[in-house]
Amino acid sequence: MNSSLPESAIVKQLQDPEERKRIFEQLVNNQQQPVYYFVRKMVLDHEDTHDICQEVFIKVWKGLNSFRGESKLSTWLFRIAHNETITFINKKKRLAGVPLELVEHELGTALQSDELFTGDEIQKRLQVAIATLPTKQKAVFLMRYYDETPYEEMAEITGTSVGALKASYHHAVKKVENILTQG
Amino acid sequence: MSTNQTYKQEKEQLQKEAPTLFALPRMSVFVVPEMYFDLLREEWALRSASTLDKSESTSSFQIPEGYFESARADLIQRISDTPENISIETKNDSALKTPEGYFGQLSEDIFAQTSRASELKEVPVRKLYSTKRFYWLAASAAVLILAVTTFLAQSAEDECITFACLLENTELTEKELIDIYSEDSFESEWTYDGMTEIDILTEDEVHHYLEDDLDWVIENEYN
Image 1 (cartoon, chains in turn cyan, purple):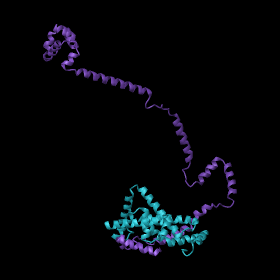
Image 2 (tube, one colour; image 1 turned 60 degrees about the horizontal axis):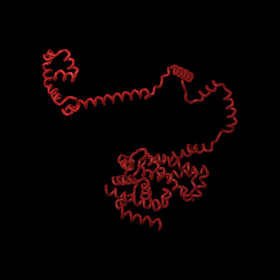
Image 3 (cartoon, chains in turn cyan, blue; image 1 turned 90 degrees about the horizontal axis):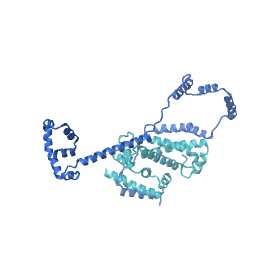
Image 4 (cartoon, one colour; image 1 turned 120 degrees about the vertical axis):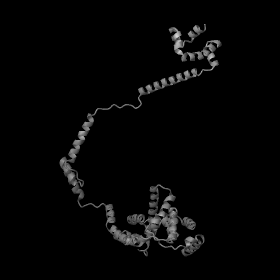
């Protein structure tokens, strides 16, 4: 991607349809895997992840026109991915009509039969523990623990203050540790 | 504070507060189907070149050159056509075919059904709860209440079985009453051997006994 280019230059390039197409293809090439794995860790299921990623990239394509360069293009992409994932999980919870805890539990236990999960027993327990976290806290934990995303960038992605994110991550770490040690 | 320092501090804190989590390798445990990302990349390349372009072009609403000029003439021509011609054209244009003569038959069927419906006699609408019915129900309830009240009153009277009660409710003297009730034994005897007793009674006496004419009995038996 044109990571070396300042965002203002990318915004200018996006005005040209051909350039826009080229930037979009680069964005797909470079970011599809990070986006995929972020979403996958959130929802665990590959099919769900695929559907969400499709939605994300369609929204990205449609929204490239309106990208104002106020954040990095990749941050903007992750904000869309974050929002889409949370919308998807909330919708799934509503449709399931079961208590939040039960949905989280089901997400975790689904790993038992997932052929596309290669982790050992302790990794399974970690994923189940992460699955019990509230949706937004889970996103914060995943971004920080696995990807070491800077809090400032996370703040732009989630629309939450840095202080709140730090507190959220701290809470998440404690919960996960408790579950791991209890199991 | 620099980003590196923040990371370092955070790791130290993680090691202290969550040693189990800290010890776990931060590895990717999710796999994707073979060639998934390659196929996805191709798919998006195709999409951005075709489908997504289409959605973009619809926003600018391109129309063929001279469209509105020819459309006006075409519209006038269509209006001036006979209704039959228009219906035939519509049929030919439609991608959804119907059996031959379907609409003609459909009209006939509809007319036949609507005319049959108009022939049907009107069924009078009856109120579920008419005023008349309400009066009947009220009258029935009143009669029922009266009957029940009478029965209960009668039962109350029948319940007057004590001697004091009987004495209170009659004009007879205590002696007369004792005499009458002492006849109970006689009456049972009489019932037991009734035929013999009846034989000695006159027809008039039998009639008064059957009528339970107490005054007559007292007058004739005890005087």
